[in-house]
Structure formats: C-alpha cells, structure tokens
Image 1: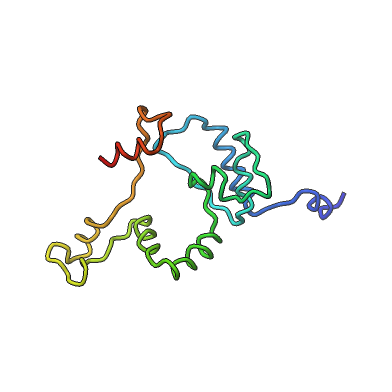
Image 2: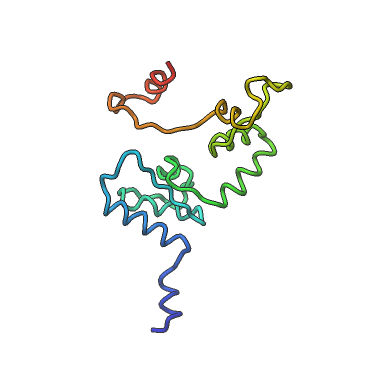
Length: 156
C-alpha cells in the first residue's frame, strides 16, 4: 500500500495533535487541580465534536458545535470564530469592545463621562478602577442547586 493510499484512508486534521493532547491529559491527570483550566485552540470549528469522545457523548454532525458542552464551558476556542464572527459583530454592537477589553484585562477609559476626573487621571489608576473578570471555584454548598441561587448569593 502506498503512502498516498494510506493517507487517503486516514483523514488528518491540523487539530489532531491538540485534540489528542487534550484527551491524553484527561487520561493521565483525571483529578487535576480545580484552580487549573485548560483551553484548546482549534483551527476548524467542526473538530469541536471530537472533544467529547472521552465523556461518552457523541455529537451528531447535524447539531451545531456551539451546543457542545466543551464549547459552552469555554474549553475550546476556534480562531476563525473570533476573527470572523466577533469582529464583524462589533460593527453592529459596539459595546462588545468593552467586554473584550474586560476579558483581556485592559483598563477602561481614563475618564468618566465627558470630563476627566481628578482621581482617575493616569493609566495606572484607571486600571485599578477598571472592571475585572475573575473565576472562583464553586462553593460545595451550591452543588445541585440552580445557577440563580448561586448568582443571588454572589451578588448579595
């Protein structure tokens, strides 16, 4: 059998090494630290369906990959979705830029409204007052409860 015939039978993807590494990490480190998160960067969004193989779930090809648990949990990022979808949406929804800035940890504007305030006049003080996003482990008391109860407890 020639190399070409062999490669025709096995379809290869540029995402294969990343997907296999993710699966190997799941197998080798089943109980990993709760403070550690893994994000897999894929080139093709259709390959998100392969991220569920070890979870005993099969994603039908006709189901949109946006509904897969790996994508919804933020464990998978696809470059083409960020550049094509997100950037084109900023034209119609300019507030997305402030969300992206918060996700990247960038400081907000050094002004409040139209005038510069006395206490937020430099970039370092602006970054201290800028919105920050963080993640915390879910308290054990909320396991099995609704997201609304967790949200209420964290909000108050």
